[in-house]
Image 1 (cartoon, rainbow, N blue to C red):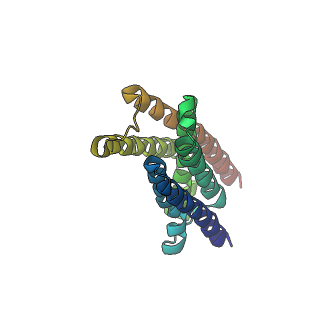
Image 2 (cartoon, one colour; image 1 turned 120 degrees about the vertical axis):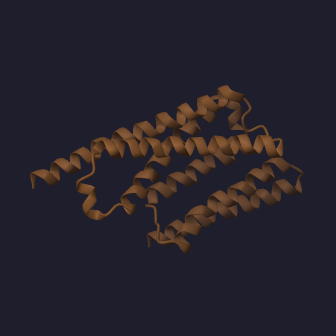
Image 3 (cartoon, rainbow, N blue to C red; image 1 turned 60 degrees about the vertical axis):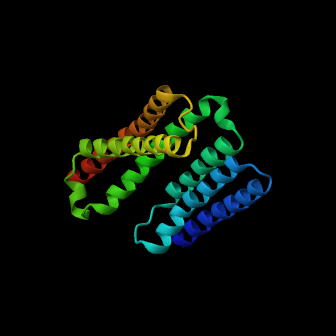
Length: 194
């Protein structure tokens, strides 16, 4: 059931972006059409994972990811909310938190079940925070590459924009890393008292 719901949510977003891409292409808005085409690719990620891999993320993560895509691609780029100034920083904070949650989910699926009781909460904290920060770095590499190779202006504010984005990503990731640390400590305490 979860897998089907993930596929439906992902497919709805992809169809929405296809409609926007065609609409904006027809009225000559090439930037908005390009953003919508990127939305098709980004929105298809949960769909591809559900169809072709055994790696399944839980519904809250997938739902948060789609909401983030709506906030960044549709509201931010297509409707122009990035012009508000604070929207970009807010989106990076949110993406840092979502990437951290994805890191936790990935970590929990990749470790051996018995190892979970022996792993330090500090390791979970460091892994989660590092995973979120690395996700932010990859995004900034993407923005820089688009600006250099395709003459886009994703890093409109230059170094200040990049550093603000990375700080926001890191703070979002750190918030979730602290939560993961506390959760792991509580779980270990319960296991040790049984």
